Amino acid sequence: MAAVQLSLKGRALRFLSMREHSRMELRRKLQRHAQEDDDVEALLDSLEQANWLSQERFSESLIHRRSARFGNSRIMAELQSHGIAGEALQEIKAGLAEGETARACEVWRRKFGQVAQDAEQRNKQVRFLMQRGFSQRAVQVALKGLEPEDD
View 1 (tube, rainbow, N blue to C red):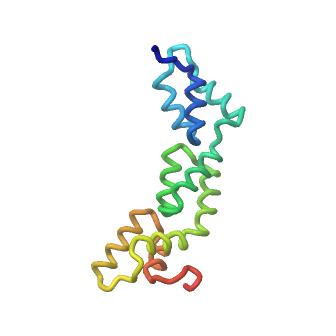
View 2 (cartoon, rainbow, N blue to C red):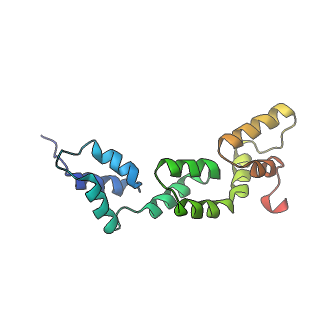
């Protein structure tokens, strides 16, 4: 039985039905399947006008998926790699800054659970949290093993 060829719009809708995509990401995926006469940019514009493609929804989705495990700088870098920039990025950064310390404490608690007993353990914990993209201030609070409200 022969496989059915999807139109470019059909492929786009299939991608968007699985999860939110950024415009840049969807463009990259669709260009692999585009024919010479297909206008990918026009399709993306029509998807945005129909509100099927939304940078705001994509940003919220990515933040929701990543915020339980990663810090602000890692999330911001991922958003930038997906083409989110400008004022939208600044608003997201301001919103993320509020809960970073609490998120760092939760990640630290799940991974380590106890305050480091020596410099080697402390360095390991610092490296772990810094690689996850947490700020130095959030890392310092988390390493104390206190609740974020207690600092």
